[in-house]
Image (cartoon, one colour):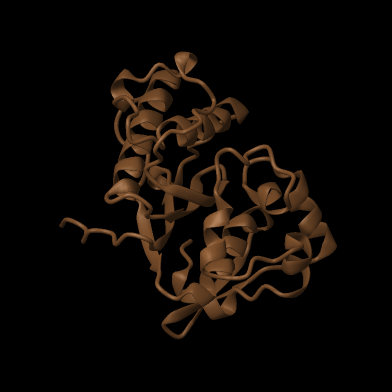
Length: 225
């Protein structure tokens, strides 16, 4: 069944994981390549993934027309999370199709396998209440601290252990946009958290926000695990 079209200027929590929960990132080279794909495929004029020559593509292309705003991301061994903003009609759908195709082609060739790499089409939840946008951002960034969930009736309760040791783990973890939200990230050219400022007041000190003020429970309906 086809998905309904995504409305412009909406935010979406995007998630996918490996088929049978298998690892989709075997080493840091895989993670770096995936992040490069996030950059070069987020372009309305990008070439087809099947004809993509990563070695010839620059890391960034100033002035290009992006398909979507990547607000934040986190890569784990067997899954990934994004918060995307639909800034171009059909952009998220086209971007995710390109990304899945390109990375699967790379992975299957490198590891001499065939068939699907990801567990079907990506999951997506629209964040239709801007009051919960920061909760989704926090959840995505805190994945390396393993936010726990448990079934309570027909819903899940989410908890993050926001201790100093967990925050320290986030600071050491390279494969998310956490540092960009702390104004010292290596992925600043990849993500665009600035788009959030049209919808909410951004925390001035993101680390302190995570330590003291974030609340996942209110936004649990927009989380995916």
